[in-house]
Image (cartoon, rainbow, N blue to C red; front, side):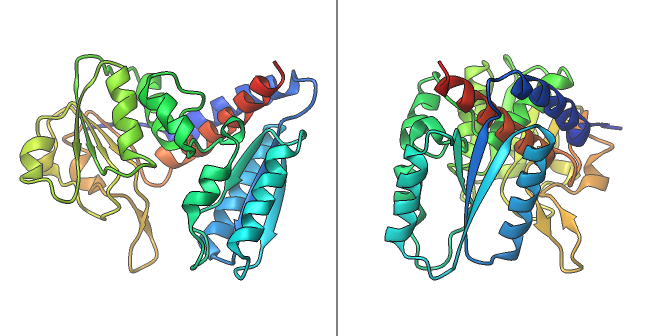
Length: 279
């Protein structure tokens, strides 16, 4: 029976450490959040981030904009936040309302305040192995593996999903830790044959029930990054948890696995941004 990787418990420990370190700074860190439109999920995510920051002694300033906000107005706000000396980190909540292109907005962020690690310069530094910030979800995955002493060096690591937010940066981080990485996607042929070779299997495809027991190498660490909502409203990941649990060596629950770690790693980035700006 797999060991459950308890992201909620680990995130609580990380947040306690962040709270202690933030209190030692000359002034509390400040995170500015940009929320455009009324997307219900985005509203929930932002409230959760505000609560997390408050627990850790990090100030927040949320800019709530109407869905009709123009691209120029949004870029003007980003420029204002870039120049605001009191702001250490800026987070643009995605998705943006229809008609707004997120790319110029994310590219306009100051790389020193880009705590989500979306700016091309930060993505490039990560690719070079010299990251300023670590992308929050991939960093959370590594924190979980380390906390439970799951070895990466020399192991076959397989990632399903090649997004710029999770799959690709996670593959880079695992490679930097001397893992042997296979990056799969929707056009990968014979996916089960590949996953059965993986010592560490990470699914970030966003497809409920994608990973079944016959796809898992006995004893493998299975990390479920996705959060999908079933027709009955319940949340689930990509992994068929009840079926995979007897076969895997380690397994993340959904919810309570990678999600809390993503939020904790965001707070780590805000703290790091504040420290870098105070040098």
